[in-house]
Image (tube, rainbow, N blue to C red; front, side, top):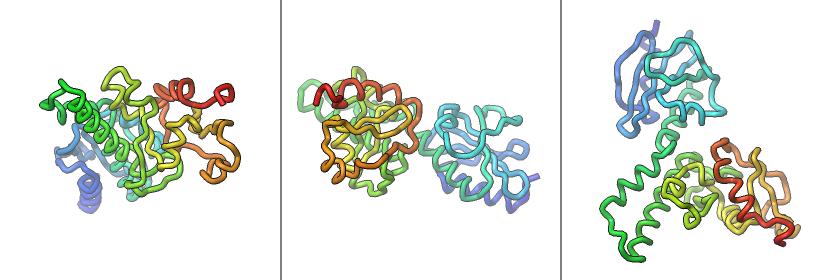
Length: 256
């Protein structure tokens, strides 16, 4: 049974991390929604420190690849799955990450873009460029949220220095759904963004940074590409776009 102290801790964890709507209680689960996302969560605690978080969206739970342990015991009705963590700080981290992901998956950025551009004209080239700038701004905001404001490779956490790098460029995408797909982007430091766009680096399926032989040793050293690097938090859904970059952008030995 939840104690008053436990309820207070769980309520604070929920509200501090974006789930600000109290939807009541289901047995020993506290049910919360959010004024900013449609996802719902249920949280409880077993003993003093086994915290359980259930969520209504399977895609968000799937993307929480390295947070918590999958929990499969009976869940509240409406929950798509659950994860468990053993510390209050980990509970806050899990809830914050779930809230961030609920803003970006799977088509959330597209919906935001459509809402922000629904009344904008598109008849002239200048007007279409305005639409593109709005889309790129939405995409950047989404990547900052998805990657938690950090470079996907180095962990640099200075948002003003980070670039929202499309894997498949905006102009090569056939539909806005591709252009605004969070899986079509990496948040990178400026030198890595430039190297990625120019094809001097690409990303392997396991997240390893692959450097083109076209980039000479002295340049690699200056750019910090002379040591093993890896994208942290790469999801299998990024593979929808990374093969395109490897085939179309990356400078192979043959290209020089």
